[in-house]
Amino acid sequence: MTEAAPQSNVPFDDDPPPPRRPDAEPMIEAIDLCKHYGSFAAVDDVSFTIRKGEVVAFLGPNGAGKSTTMKVLTGYLAPTKGQARLRGFDVTKDRVKAVEKLGYLPENGPLYPDMTPRKLLKFFGEARGIHARFRSQLERVIDECDLEELLDKPIGTCSKGQRQRVGMAQVLLHEPEVLILDEPTTGLDPNQIRQVRELVKKLGQTRTILLSTHLFQEVEAMADRVLVVSDGRLAFDGTVSDFLYKGGGQMDRAFHTLTTES
Image 1: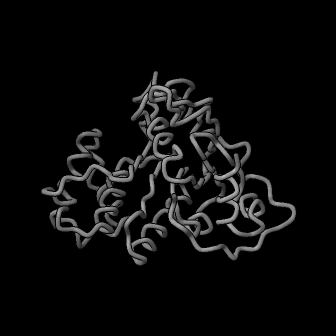
Image 2: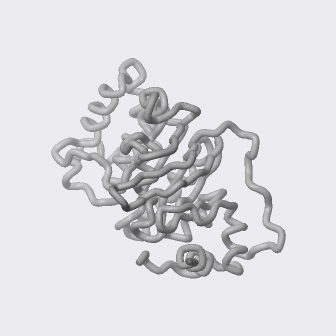
């Protein structure tokens, strides 16, 4: 069971607006995507396209296939069937080009507790071949993620919210066009959630974002569009207004209906 979320008070229209940017370049594509573990289908024939400039909320109960779908889209897992594409490149056949402009933040990102944020970012910058531009890139992510006071503090002594900002800085260091973020506010307190939400909202002005979340407030605050998965299948794909309409103006009702229908 996913955690309960408060009802939305956002008004809804009888005639929801059409999706944004219908003619923009496809940046994230799932094409008949499947991921099986033996007889169990974690992802079962999922298809959707996210276009340049969209911020898309990815919803579903725990165990519905959200994280697995994201891992397949990033090339971390190989699909059993179907195709995942980033910026037009197949992530299985041409992974280097596909992920060149991808920033992926898993639910528990790779941080080294004995390193400071400065050393960690330098390490990842060198791994990505950022040399001549590293100083300017470092200054940019320090500002974007508010890291000035944390730069020389061991990551192991940072709070979860601070570590999440460090993880986000690592993701943004190479200026990715596409961001895939898996529950970036999980376990954070309300102030930390607000900080991450404001950062994602700012990033959404210039980047394409797929954001997994359990919080309906984040959908209202940041997303153009909503995808819902249930039992490994895509149960809904539409605008935030479409989603509200499905639940009579209440996101929790729409979510419940979509994820419990037989």
